[in-house]
Image (cartoon, rainbow, N blue to C red; front, side, top):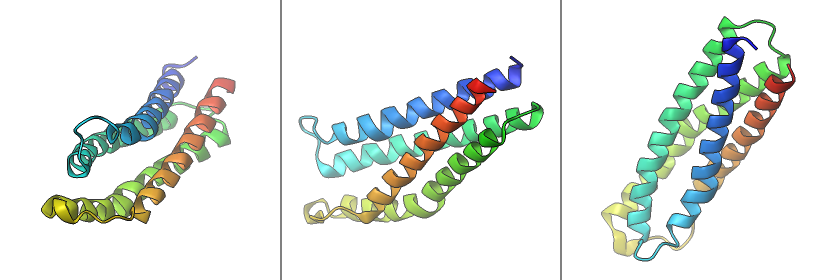
Length: 145
């Protein structure tokens, strides 16, 4: 296995593990911790997801570089990394700003926390699911290549 192939494979599964652990385990559980208020949870979430998205962007670029440097990549892998990267871009450029405005409003007036959940959270989760499916596809296609 070429170094670029091994790097792309490792980064794919690290990225997948990060998204699964943070988005689907840490984020929902944080609000069940004793003493965590909605404003505190949102503040923590903002920091965690900013860091996650930054690392995800680095991993996406590194995987793309590995694919460019390597050769004979399956079409499935190329499409999967493109879909995962595009989902990440949508989250960072379109969804996170909406979530940030809502978080700003909650942090500015913690006593006026809206009762209903933001639809932007659901969109963020939907794009996380797209990333997860794409990363599983990418990793599988790299293993089988």
